Structures are given as C-alpha cells and as structure tokens.
Image 1 (tube, rainbow, N blue to C red):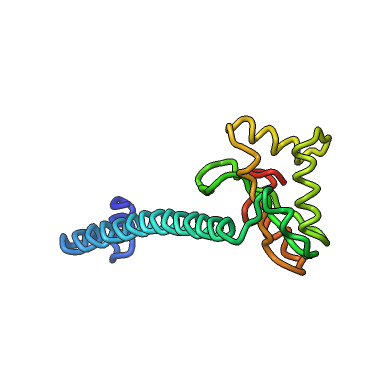
Image 2 (image 1 turned 45 degrees about the horizontal axis):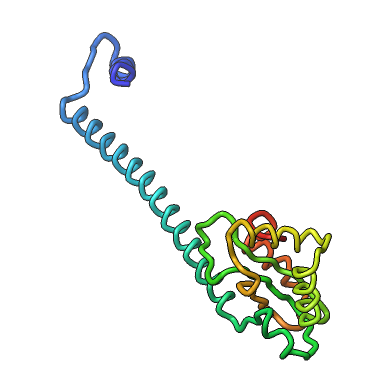
Amino acid sequence: MIAFLNEFVSSSTQEGTKQDLPWWVWLLIAVLSLIALGLGFWGLLGAGTSRKNDYQKNKETKNIKLNTLIKKESISIKDLEKHSEQIEGIYAIFIGNSLNIKEYFLPIYFGYSNDVIKTFKDFSNKLIEQSDDEIVKKIKDYIIDQELTIDQIKFIIVEKNNKENLDQYISEYNSQKRGFN
C-alpha cells in the first residue's frame, strides 16, 4: 500500500521531479489505520457479546414463561373426579415437578379439546389401561425411563375458548421436537 501511495504521489507531481510524502503524513496514515482496525475489532466483539446476551435473555424469558405455565392451577389424576364442568380450550399435559428450558427434552404436551376435563379423564384411563395411542405410549415410556409415577402427571388448562393459539404454544415451547407433540 505504501509503495502504491509513493507511486501515486510520484506520478502526480511535476515532470522530472520526484517528491516523497513527508514523515508526518505517513505517521497520520498509520495512526488512522490503527484506529480504524481497533474500531472494527471493537465492533466485532461488541456484536458477539450483544448476541450472546440477547440469546441468554431469550432463554431466561422462555424459562420464566415455562415455569409460569407449570405453576398455573393444575389438576392431578387423583383430583379429576372432583371436576365435572365442560371447558373448551387449550390444555397442557405436564410430567414432573419443574422444567428447565436448558434441558433438551421438555415433558409437555399441548392440545385442544371441546371438553378438556373429559379429555383429561379419557387420557388417564388410557394410561391405566393398555392403549395403542401414540402420545400415551410416549408418556408411559417417559414415566418408566425417568422412574416417575402416574401421580406426577399434571393437567393444565392453558387458555379457555381459544383454539388459534395452540400452534403458537407448540412452536414457542418447541414441543413438537422437544416434547410429546
């Protein structure tokens, strides 16, 4: 680059005379180049740190949402007989006491039903009996693998009278890949 500048300056001067750039011009070019490199490197590091912080905040937000969902009023298999009302809406079947978004597999299933309580009762009956239902088989296998009990299954009514948000819940918690959906 320096040779190019020398050649450029030499060719742009008068015929027959050759002038070099003064030392202070070279010093100015070197200092400005170092400042530009430093700013570029600083921007590169800042972008990586910012992205990492955003990713971490996003994970924490999902973990809070997930734990808030789990802490909603849940119905256990033992308490199903106490409920007889007909509720239409989105429900979740969750296994365990807590969830950690950092774990790959989240033991949760989202669904929609015109009668959520009846769906919960049918599901609990299928769990006790031998059923060919794919979701019931997956949940039974998970309970056996994790050495859990059927009493640790919780039924949660996520939203009443709303079917549109079912796909949103499935994609938000990625339960199609990381759960039972």
